[in-house]
Length: 237
Length: 303
Image (tube, rainbow over the protein chains, first blue to last red):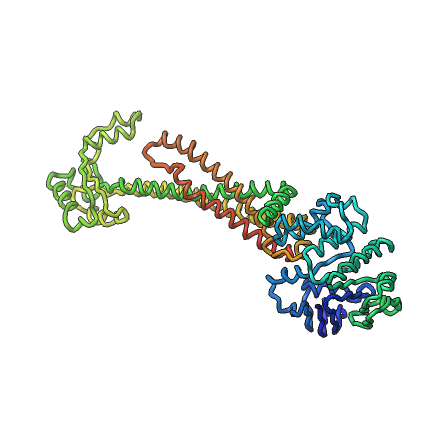
């Protein structure tokens, strides 16, 4: 589903590359943790998949297609196949839960009937039944993240990218979010989650890819989170 | 659905950005009013040219008692000279240039003179003998005045050949200057309008960056993301154009009416001419705002 071939990304010629010759394969339906300290290249990985940035060298393939060959007018189509969730939720504060999720469907031209039919289902999937009309500020952090997840999956993307989705949440709430992501994964969606929450990684027992200074240093099938040797990486960030 | 969505986005964008939108409306209103005024003045010149060039004539004044030009050295024009001049005017050589020839006697000249200067004390002192007789020559092509002037200036019995068009040219010169001034103001104001639209769209894009960011992430097309912003600018400009058109209409309707009453002979343009100018104003306003918004979005709205 996602393949990186010798991908290097240099933001600034003078500094070290954010990703250095990274090769990685994520199969359809997989659940992958991307772990590593801040500045290890997790967010760059996500940006490259979305074609928010271009790889300096190497090839990024999404659903078998090299994103470098996608013309700019086709990029929206690429992004419709990918859902994204962030640490800071990014909800629209003046729209209700329903309207926030509906927004993602409206802007790609879904009909009112389809929207009305789909959203209750999705809200049920993320565990927010009956909260259609709540405003974001009336919700807890965990609930807000669920809205964001609902928005990310409402157009049924094949891939869900989560950039530290539990970064702002307490451990109990985080586990709730992980259950939702796991359920989405069970339904066939490929999930890539960048995190440095060791509890979660150790509990879930999924594939773990560890990045350090832009390189893959570990790729375990049912891995655990190994604490960073803080002294060596602190300077790189 | 998409249409309703875009409309909703425009409405919310304009509400949030109301002060800027109002200033765009006002600035485009002023600039388009001047553009329209410049256009209408040009139309007025054309109208007057069409009206007057058919009526203006070259006047060939004949010698009177106290004429001073060389060709009048032998005193007032004689009957033979007058006949020769008339024959020459009607000759086949000049028929390509001369359309009509009318003779104006000294008595007729006095009647015209009294008409033109009614209420002036000079009228009483002037007698028919002091005014020259003349041939009023209508030309096929008013631009070919030189031909007549050359042919008759040194003819015995001809005092001077005068082209009434010269006076009109002077008037047209003034109207032209007014129209250029209006155009100059219009250009400066239009630059202001373009920059203001750019700033407004930039602010609008900034205040809605959360929405556009999400639209981008979920794969909304570039058109859907940019359209509300572009239309926001275009709608404001079109409102400005509408107010400008209304203003020009009012000026023509009431100002023109007054002028036509005061100078019934001048042939002023009417509100009819707005049919030409108004669509141009709307088009110009929409184009300027649209282009300005698109260029701004290319820089400030990542898609």
